[in-house]
Amino acid sequence: MHRSGFVTIVGRPNVGKSTLLNRIVGQKIAITSHKPQTTRNTIRGIYNTDEAQVIFIDTPGIHQPKHKLGKLMTDAALHTLNAVDLVLYMVTGLEKIDETERMIISHLKATKTPIILLVNKIDAAKDLKRLEALIHEYKSLHDFKAVLAVSALEGIHVDMLMEDIVSMLDEGPKFYPEDQVTDHPEKFLISEMIREKVLRLTQEEVPHGVMVLIDSMKTDENLDHLINIHASIIVERDSQKGIIIGKGGKMIKRIGTQARQDILALLGVKVYLDLHCKVVKNWRNKEMHLRNFGFGNET
Image (cartoon, rainbow, N blue to C red):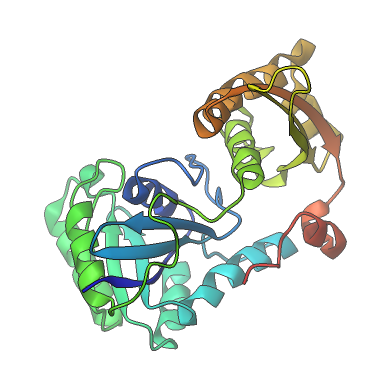
């Protein structure tokens, strides 16, 4: 019997949802950083075996939004709860249950979709009694279908998680070809790879005001093994533009050099990457810009 289904991964920012998705599919399709709210769009990753196909949806971190982009991100995550076969609610074994977690659990209580509580980062949990007490507290707040402790970073118990997920899914077909690991186009993945380098290399004041757009992407007219990519890094303030570019253009060159390595691995051909930085003031609060940048259009 072949099983298949859709599974959403939800939780507050920076609990390791994207790291888990990359671990499950075996390659990098979702960007990661130590900064919260790294994921802005829902990302689909496809897990394939002879016995099953599981389509995972990595969602933006659910939080108390401070701008329109934040609300769209949280709404996108919550929207998936009733549109899938199974929910993975990811928390960490390092933090107490706060108002944000209680808000998320209130939304989970309103769905009839089976939910697995996934306690991540157990590799960093030193106090096992405290971890057990935290899990017990979560279990007292909701009747989860199952509870598992994992380390997405180290891969601890991830195989066990996959066995449990597959066992909970019904018989079904393959929705995607066996060699496909995501349904996102290359342009989207490339823009995210560039944004990841911005997140990792720039000051704290920059990341959440950054968006990356691919202006053009085409094979070189003279060299068919070279792809020319022109991209714009969008920021909200002139001061952020100065940080992105850096003294003598050093920062934007570092961003391009590191992003080019990931893009090369993705495309398998040589890449010419041309980056520019543009200011679009307060774009995260303007519906026109959010629509133009592809937010609020998730299905």
